[in-house]
Amino acid sequence: MDVAVIGAGSWGTALAILLARNGLDVTIYGRDHEEVMIMGQCRENMKYLPGFPFPKEVSVDELKNYQGAPIAYIALPASAIRNVFSEMKGETPILIMATKGLETDSGKVATTIAEECFPNAKVGVVSGPNLAVEVVQGIPTAAVAASKDPAVADRIRGNLNSPSFRVYASDDVIGVELAGALKNVLAIGGGVSDGLGFGDNTKGALMARGLKEMITYGLAHGGRLETFMGIAGVGDLFATASSKLSRNYRLGYAIGSGKHIAEALRDIGQVAEGVNTAEAVMHVARHEGIQIPVFEMIDGVVREKIAPRGAVALLMERMTREEGLDFGHLTHQTYGGEKMERDLDDKTGH
Image (cartoon, rainbow, N blue to C red; front, side, top):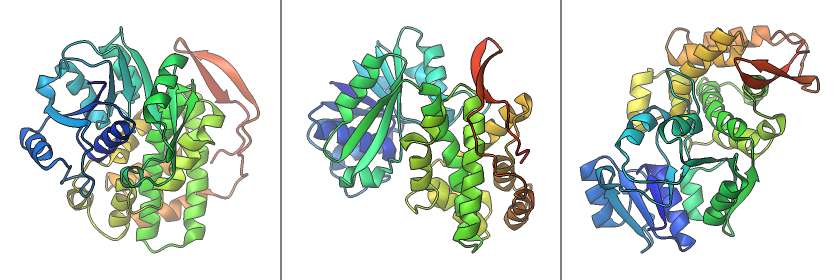
């Protein structure tokens, strides 16, 4: 085995197929015994990614049998990562996080969890506008591989690069992770706007202000502006805030159409990371005094504390001050022992 993929959902399966098409021997590890057995017998993920048979290089096994691998791609919901890590045996020198979410209680990104659980491993992340179905269909796609170690980013690029899947390298790990996680919250908001029957004007304003808040939050935690304006940020936001292939968009659309959150999630049948991420982001933002009203309203809608139409109306009432998208006045500060980038001249006040 050259590569392990931890997680047998749609994205984990898509990654495994992509890796195998590049000639790597891949094992997908899942926790559900019955699902693993079916996938192994059918040579296809009938539940989450039907219609795409596994290449011969792909095998399937249960997580309890994992004994280590040279490199593992972690394609799990953020809420499951810490528990799954506790079950992983053997040595895994390189861990690549392919998760777009935040740990609910702490607001931590996936690479931070990995570093805490496997302090001797090298860690990286891959993210971008990567809808699983389009990836396995061979539709032209781009992604960003980020790591503090350039060799790890190059390793990801070597694993995944193909004529239809192009990977760019970055060392802005926190920026890439936050961009991928935060855009899921905005994708819910885009779906809510469409579900309510509002037009492109409303959605354009909502996404523009949401992107501004993504950047504000990201800079406050050490990310770089260019990351949020690139493939992992704006690119991923464009892809998921209007695509019916996006679980978060579909969830938002269902809520805007009048469904309760529990019913909408049941219909989707998979984790929509934006739900827990909205809660995690707002917990951190309130603690740190970061003003992100678009995220606050989306979180309120998801928690059913405010009606979708009322939330949009309140946001539109707030959008009356200066545009304030100038991030040119940035400075480095030390806060809580970590270097952070803050916009000290934000005149918007939302």
